[in-house]
Length: 251
Ligand code: PGA
Image 1: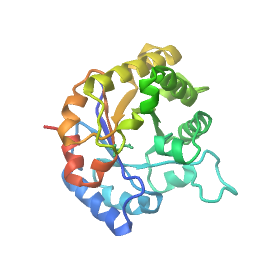
Image 2: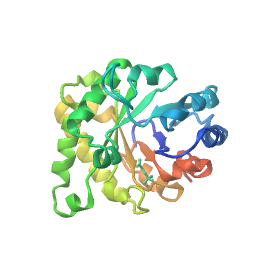
Image 3: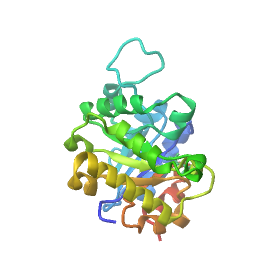
Image 4: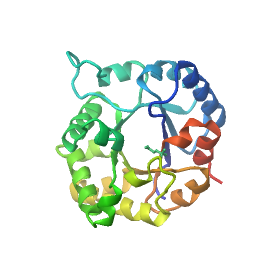
């Protein structure tokens, strides 16, 4: 593990305003002064501003779960990069598998969002990952390669190095089934190889690759010990501050 660890909590469609404030407060108490790990929480849009207020004097950064690529206008239901920036967001999750499978996210829209986020000065967390069928049928590498190349098309090496990639095997998300550290590391090495082909070795070595999919205190350490796992994108376990802290500071 060569790069600085980055742990982000994806709260998904959970937390009302009061719940979000309370969870953010607990997260700050548990990990707000951690110095050697980058930490972010990604609440729903409606709670971004309130959570920004709670975390403002801590080392915890704010992330959003999605964004629209257009700057403004008649896009009912959507939120722009400038809007996210204005409430204190630093990171934006793009291309989560739930977006891809339920809300028509494609490699093309992932690319548009990644470009828009970079242009605005925010930092993308680009999610990729195969389904169980794809893994079993042997098309996993092709699927991941297409997603990575799709996301990063037309982006400079300098901009790519500002991104985080989250490898999230769909079969491990919210299922309790985790990729073994070896499975995760193999996928991360493969992703780094594609990044290297696109942008060169330096970018490939320094871009951070998070693992996501049922990561929890009990398996975080063994995953993070792998050579190419630089952090985690945490769903379920991010909803309880003590579990989240157990991943940020794994024993
Ligand atoms: P999980 O979700 O930790 O609940 O599996 C991870 C994610 O979807 O980012």
